[in-house]
Image 1 (cartoon, rainbow, N blue to C red):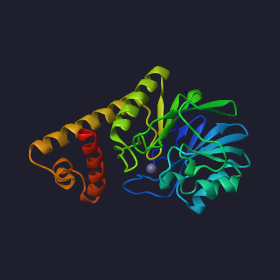
Image 2 (cartoon, rainbow, N blue to C red):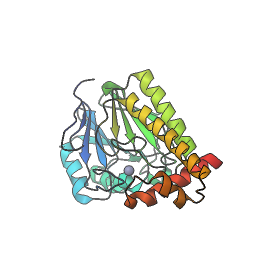
Image 3 (cartoon, helix red, strand yellow):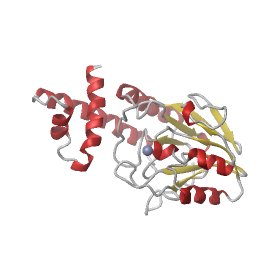
Image 4 (cartoon, protein in one colour):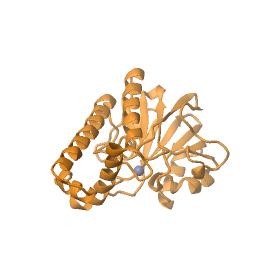
Length: 262
Ligand SMILES: [Zn+2]
């Protein structure tokens, strides 16, 4: 790989030779700097991954950036609103289909599933099924750039949460699979749905896996100390986390309890 771009002032404009992030203006504790909309391609044709929320100026900026290049498909890493809200509007603007695992998010007949290989401008993009953060989460491997687009399965900073439509057992399996894949194919960058590009895929995935194991251990020990409800467990395990994030932490604790008791 060459040309890994990691701007100092945030994810906008980051990426690799054939993948460019255009940052959507929806920052929050959950979305970090905002959603990374990825433009993948070479030559006249491109794929656009995760148009982001339904934000007119952002979608027009992405369309303007194309300067006449043709969008062959809009792809979704998953159906959460901060990735998909603008998908159908954007797809209509550029006259492209939307392909996603969840039929409810598609525009056109074509789906998207583990093992699919898309081509654009002579580049391949391999679909890797990674359920867990949500039931419909996908990653995309771009072999030419040795880069993996990870959606919300791995973020550029911090850790992700298991959403109510996700599953921790699936998520742990997906992290193991991503790590094995990254090692086998020699991945050199993770391109996340939020936050900066990660230049050390194995290190990042090992950190994610270790973090999950550590949280599960903390929850087991909080229960041994008498915590019963998710809220009581959050008070102990997430004592060092800002209280504004406790509702999110409680969602994560519920997912972990479902895993431990499942
Ligand atoms: Zn997201």
